[in-house]
Image (cartoon, rainbow, N blue to C red; front, side, top):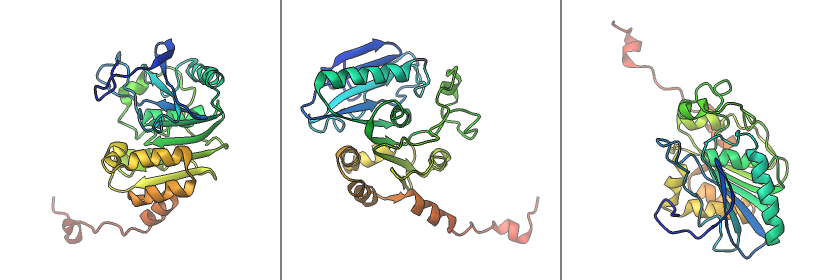
Length: 266
């Protein structure tokens, strides 16, 4: 098997019941990280999403990693998927002796990382550009995932409408229109640290990767303090969501078109 850059991976397949596959990468520390993949290549729904956060989740070999892929692209809604992930995580914690559990994901994977904290004692979550919901009844403006969401028969988790109270959770979004329909719906919580990056869209993680900020954000989210994370996010151009919304509310309205000022001539 190869990752999306063509690098050969030697991982142990510890759960293989399609559409769900979970692969284990050994570590030497006390933390285990659930690394959730996004939708990946959507033109071939039978393909398996590529692994994500391969290096950053490992922390240079310190962390045990469970790479989680959902071939059905269900946003954790597939029957029994949440329970299967939780059972596998518990089994691997017992096997490895790891005592702390974290989750990281991008896009769909970010949503899954936030939701799995309802099932497991996850003390850290880092979610890049997660969807609040792909249920058309909840986010009717969502147009990016129309085909995939039609394949979800039952929305077991219609929205990330609450943040698990334990641990620290970190969410990052761009501020394109397609991102804000999700970002501004997430609830506030004392343990949620939500940053919005102006001028970025759904490829935020890739945009920040060139400067190394993505890896630093994952590292701080998994092992640093909220202050550490906030400093890295701000240095990379992020604004705390509360600050972003305050500034957004005070932006001047666009000037009317000249034609409007003179009376539209139609």
